[in-house]
Amino acid sequence: MSGEHLITDGETKLIAEGFLAACPWFGDVQWGRVVIGAGSEYLGGWTGDIPDDQELTDDQRWSWTVSFSDPAGNQAGLSHEGVLKGLSRVVYDDNSNSNSYRNLVIGQWFREPTETRLGLKLSTSDQSLICQQALYGKSVFPTGGAEELFGKKLDVFESQRPDAADED
Image (cartoon, rainbow, N blue to C red; front, top):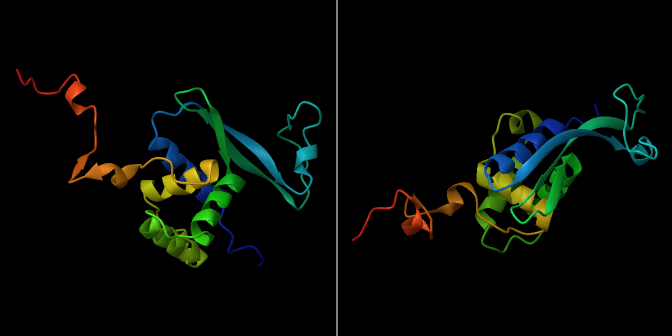
């Protein structure tokens, strides 16, 4: 059957969920639904609202979307198609950078047969890299294991934390 090899909405949503869970500084997280496919941009009319019982063509389907804001109030969002764009950037763009190993891991996941890929889980760092590529076209900040230095999470403000040891 055609399309069985395609990365599913469920897979891309898991990637976005992992990214947002690793980035607690993002706020105002709102999950929603959207119709994707040929002509879907015309379904909402003037208001953009698509009723749940909307009849869809064979080329259209319901998918997910999420919006959020950063600490400066900048609004951002991800969708199935956006995460696929980030994944394509990681897999197909020049990989001669500091994320070369992560790119190899994600590339292998991408090339696995569907049945195998569905049983594999990308790390938080991998999910973050994919979503950052989708949002910014590059890796902007580390998440997950990439933040650890010598087995300890890097914290340049460690001495200012309330639980910091007194050195008087």
